[in-house]
Image 1 (cartoon, helix red, strand yellow):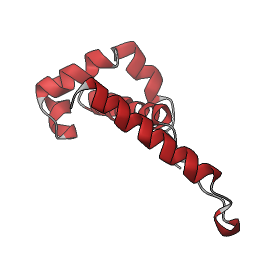
Image 2: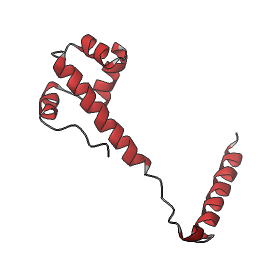
Image 3: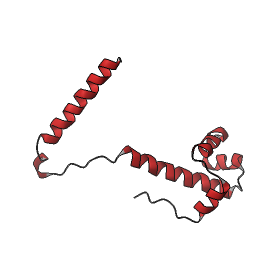
Length: 103
């Protein structure tokens, strides 16, 4: 898809959304707005950090065993540890925290 086609598609989608918003009150029913992606991403990251931290604590920072506990590859675990900058001091402070609220 060319850049011009992409812009045209985005413009038409924005116009469609604007029409739907201004079309009326949907018979008196309130339309729920979707949750922002940043919020969902932050929740996923918190949950991921919590799960990785718990597995690392349980395995005594044996990363190979922690990866098995999480059912992910060793390299995947290393990537996540670097991505979230998880360190032993961070893990010890996180274990004192409660599980992230998903609701």
